[in-house]
Image 1 (spheres, rainbow, N blue to C red):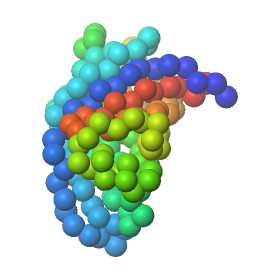
Image 2 (image 1 turned 90 degrees about the vertical axis):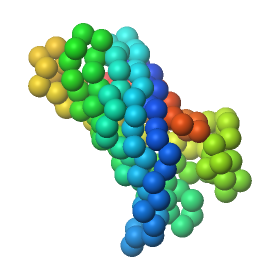
Image 3 (image 1 turned 135 degrees about the horizontal axis):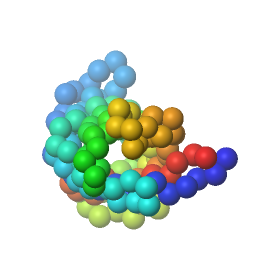
Length: 149
């Protein structure tokens, strides 16, 4: 198995909406308000709409579950869903929650990415799995996605 660079994503976020405790942990929703992506085979804009329906667990780990829409540079529309985890030392997670800059090497944030489209130019994405290494900033998530070949 090999990794091929797909795109670097910059996903802009609204502030966290805290829905409170659920049987699985503390449920949070973070709305997606825009962004961009750029790579060798895929580039364009992250459209407003969609969200991260996240669960914050008692040990501080966040389970990530996003769904949103991309528009490519040539006008195709793609659905993307990501699932993953973010965890690290409590002091690092506290700095992240305060919106402070944190070196992504200080915590673990990985994603699994799936795509869906009916656009003939991008049908290959329907059959492609991708993984990503991510970083959280005060108002965005940045991640580098790689296809599994």
